[in-house]
Figure 1 (cartoon, one colour):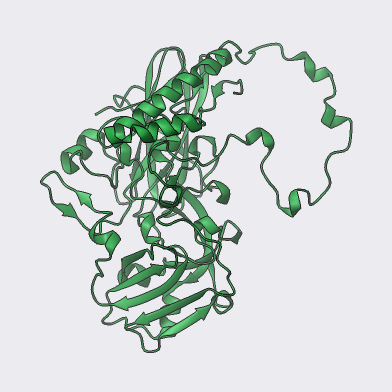
Figure 2 (cartoon, one colour):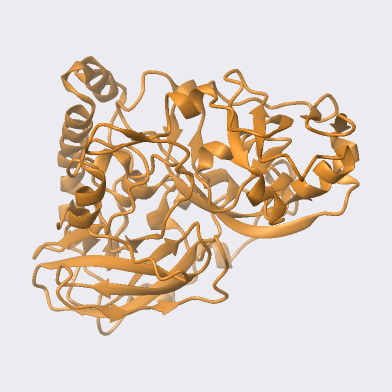
Length: 450
């Protein structure tokens, strides 16, 4: 563990034996065994935290070691094109990883890995830290063999090779992708300790590809009568999703092959995936192999059984695709420790599936008083927005919250308001205000304020 004014969140909670214990206890109920697993692991992380608290950053004078030349200033370093010609992070940043949630699933092929939001800067998620959600595992597909078909209500069904797609006019745009189940385990109560696990199923990248409307025009789609498309993936689950034609006609939906200046990573859909800005991540179909144009919703398996909102009266809302306005403070956040009183920069991320973030307000007293944060520019539509605000901690307990408002005027709800409308038994689309309790000893905990 590193020393400094803010201690990095303890991420590597469980060893192999601990994970086995969590799985064995999973019959007790999902939220309970996840919560107990993290509680046990957090106890093991307490010792190095306490040690770090005894080594605060000096506030005057300085370290006399600055007078001695370090090893790296007295000799030759490594040559160009090291690491097989592809740059990798420093070994001192090896703890910054996307991670599984212990006990969440029994197999990694149908599971989630969470992005380390607390360790990231700006709005772009490095491709190697982008969250993952697989239904039947990921594949590294040979692009020379991959084919993409458009059929259904079209004049001429078409089959494209990757070379043919990449010859067409392309665009590059920054967009966030959020799993509809992001923050799902927090619906009933606090379940996990850090922002990586509460909100880590969101990422933001620059995607490059061909607007889907261009490909539909080539195939002669019946835009007059067609109302929906069905997107089908090429993984083992054959993930299929219905998408309204109105989204495609906007020109926003892309058939993408590029991410953050390079080809998509295999775990992110290489060589081809659908980009549907503002819509829950399950509709961003990976390993895209087919688009069918139709005049009605397709009620595919993952639309008729999963990804629906259970309402308080027992009914389900179907096709609730838009990811509503949401935000979270990433520093200070759960698992971190403030090592002394004084100035801190509170920072976090905000986003909306309906357009741009208009403003973010921050509270340090549990929502009684709010101050407007600074938004880093440019503020992009349906992309993550970074916010910052100054704070001087007096050493007393504080509850830090953020509340986003988007350009439609939608205001991020409290848990009280969200549960009044949606109940407590849902899984998807939890966009409630997140609270972090800073205790007198500087430790930051996940809490809920209704």
